[in-house]
Amino acid sequence: MCPPRVHVIGRKNSGKTTLIAELVRLLSDQGLRVATIKHTHHAHELDVPGKDSHRHRTAGAAAVAIVARNMIATFRPRREEPTDAVYRALQSQFADCDVILVEGDVRARAARIEVWRPASGEPPLAAQGVPVDLLVTDEPPAVDVPVLPRSDPAAVVSWIRRRLVRTDGVEGEPASEG
Image (cartoon, rainbow, N blue to C red; front, side, top):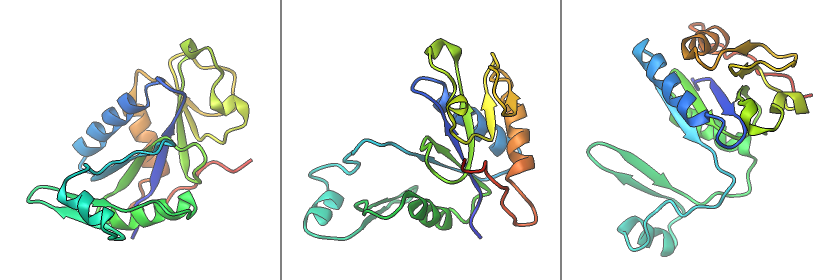
């Protein structure tokens, strides 16, 4: 069975990575196995040019995996498949985990937690029509979304566990798509 996933979204430098690291630690301390995915809209060469795996790919391999004593890495080109199909494939690879936290990807159809800082000078994404299930901030704006304090990551963990991590194998429902 595929674990549920929740996307932590927000503007640049809003604290997404910091919150995810705190959530991973707290969820792991509670005995849950947590996977993370970092989404970026930039193109990156993740393999190292000149290394054997990179040479395999440039020779024409459709996918390459590196299997070491302590870690596994796979490299494959991103096709034009929909992003949600990519996430479903990753969810099946992380079937031994209890929850997947994704940093970014505001367009994905899944539960979304927005991290917002008023110092950004921009309104929360939730105030601009982006479907958001939870807003995490220490200075709540006037939005019609549940808000939890940024200073209390344990409350966010409780929300995740109530909404998404189910012992009956049923994944929680994300925010509606407009």
